[in-house]
Image (tube, rainbow, N blue to C red; front, side, top):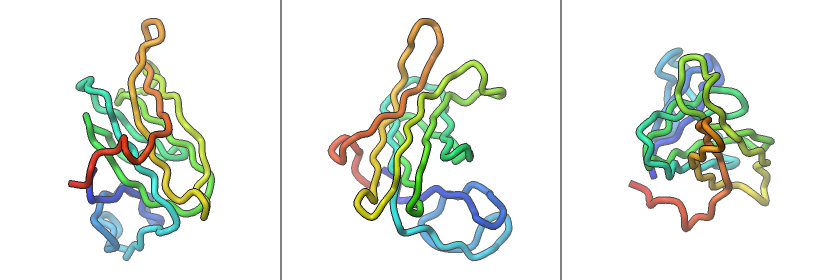
Length: 137
C-alpha cells in the first residue's frame, strides 16, 4: 500500500497524489487533507490494463496492478466506481459500491476485481477486510 494520498484540490479540482498537506501542483493554493475518514482501494486483478477510479463521478487517476491507494475524505456518502481506461469509457462497465463515512465507520476497505459476464469486461468493487489489504510500502 502506498504511503501517498489521492484527492482533488478543492480550489481547482486537479487530481493530486501527495504524502501530506501542501500546495496544489496546479493552482499553488495550500491544501489540507481531510481527516474525517479514509477509503483504501486495492486492485487484485493481474490483467495488464489500467483502471480509472471515479469517486462520486470525479476522476482520481489510474489504479495499477496490485496497487493500493488511500483517499482521505470527509464524512459523507460516497460512490466508488472503477473502470478499464478507455477513451470513451463506453465499452467497459464498472459495478460500483455506495457507502457512508461516519464517526462509527471512518475507514472503508475496498477490493477491485475483474469479472466477465458474457463477453463484456466488467470491474466489480467489493468491501474487503483489513487482512486483505497489502502492507504499507
